[in-house]
Amino acid sequence: MKNLSQQDVGSEIMTRRVVTAPPDDSLLHVSELMERHGISRVVIEDQDKAVGIVTQKDLIAFLLDDVSPRGMDEMKASEAMTTGLITAELTTPIQEVAKKMVWKDISSVVIVDEKGMLAGIITKFDLTMYCAKRCAGIHKVRDFMSPNLVTVTPTYSVFSVVSTMRQKNITRVLVVEEALLGIITLADLSSAGAIFAPAKLVRERRAVSVKGLIVPAASIAKLTARDIMTPNPKTVREDDDMSEAAGIMARNRFGGMPVVNAKDELVGIITETDVTRALASPSQPQRG
Image: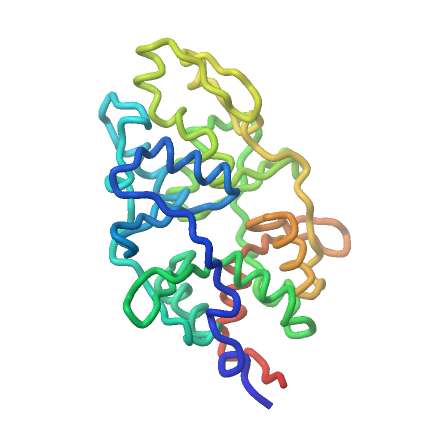
């Protein structure tokens, strides 16, 4: 019998075709890369070495903090990127990769070869796929779900939603009005990133597309949670197998799902972070 951390290594699950951009690339292009490839981060690479990373969280935070009148096309990736990357080697056990993410509170680990060159990346999505394939019968959703729900009403302004997410340091909120109506994630926000740097839009009287809506620059402040949420999110039950929930998340590219009990009452949320915590757990069972 071997422990999962001894049996499986990061190179087996890492994403080898990493989406990268140079440091002087525009934030607009970085945002477009995320949306085009359905990813939540772009590695910033200089001369084949990873020098930083821009995540959806980095993007939104930078746009909110920047007080210049520039548009996203005038902002550089190097301004918003996180440096001091956490890396791992090709032979690092998967459980150790998960532990790095939990301990450092990060959502990805860059994998480097023996020369320190970029070889791939492991994200919480990769760990979620691994859990779906290899961890059946180990944990229930209720074992690692987050019971402390953060909710907003559908009339919350988009800017209040972002403020709540930053204050709570979370990547998604549930939209609730008596019943669950929708979910708002960083992906929803970053796809409409231009609204968080509106000075240039207003100056040029340009409209912006938000969730298929064409919004005049002067009306950006009127956007609400209902406008940007993903409606009718899929749910899982608290007594479902963690690997089943992970499978649903992986297949649908969900970063998290609301959790209900046997009475269909909202009791929590299960996210890729929770799956990562499960894989990093010292209670991870032995498997052959």
